[in-house]
Length: 517
Image (cartoon, rainbow, N blue to C red; front, top):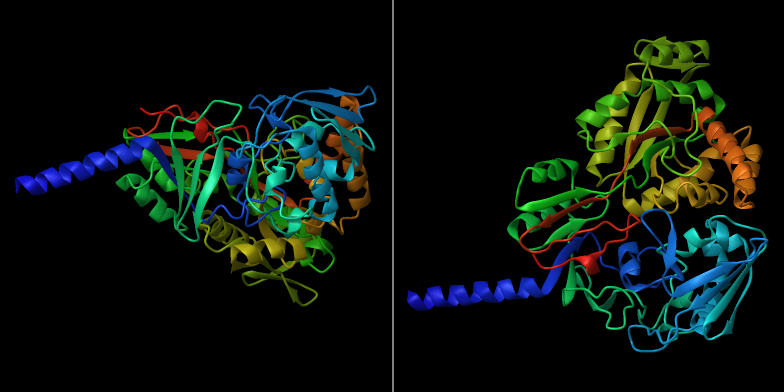
């Protein structure tokens, strides 16, 4: 018996020692090949762990140094000259210099079509390494979000030249070699990704010797793993259900934290020419008035997320506008439909022999979207609108956003530093639900012109005037049903880690700042 107890004690001590040396988290999928210049299946949190950009976005909205230690902007706002710190190294020990930056910009612009949703991509006129420590970027016109967009998780993160397979990284990379706090050393598909500290990182070195991200697609499995001690931390949007988030707030064994606002959860109502919702703005307005948002905030979102009445949080630059508020009023919704000629026959509405029925597309594995969809379905039934719910697989869902085969679909703005500038800029390209839903609005040309004006100036007065026009025009079009201002949750074991901090972006996890308890 004593020998068995000794073996168990030894095993426990060994396990404790193992956990003390590293951090274990969980994510629904593998990190991917970690190409810094591409999108899915590359996971943004991992791209941020491994790579840096020229600059970084800070929590207070300012821009700080990263690969570049300083920069100068010409008087006309079109030329940026970045000065790189000397003697810095990538994780494999190769030098970081302006020629490496130039090589990355070459491959990004070589694949410009992939990135045209991003305003700066359409502004870049030329770029070059002036010498080993100076990189020059020239734009066709001033762009106020230049530094913000250079700080994003992708595509302007810098891969070491040793990580290139060919000059064109869209064909793949040889190895994920960056200058971020961590380096990826092992991946097992469907099981885990292992990161270790980058010995040449320029910032605070991680206190832990490794970081394992287990692949756990099921959110309930992730919570059980956290509670059992199999993992140390869960963070990231949709990493944990709101019910479990609220429940674990009451458990003293866990640190439970939420970030500042990181985007807006919305429903987008399609106003394109082949949808009922295009022909009649009364239908769109009726949907907005019929939705009992307060009930969703309290009953589904558990008062954890703040109710949203605008596309962007008023706390964001230029977003604090006086917009018309579509208050919950089902009697007004019925009146709008009656006036538009949609007459009730029993519990359903018809006009010119056509039934008022719509579809709503949501991600089938997302329980919050499912619950909100069902709530809206019930609210619309009360005013005579039939709503069919379409559960979609995630990849198919985003394809549906792009091809416009929806009446109503879920969408999210992207948080800092995308909102509001880069998100508005993305409305000009057919890469998201916004473009599809807006394309046949009668004032679409004016909206696009306003967005172009925003993208082509750094003048605060001009920006304010055009933001006011664009945000009011979009609001008056009644194609957006804002639901809540979202946040990033974090739940961690207090016996394993301390000093948790949120990053400035929703996919920036500051694992390198965590310390032992």
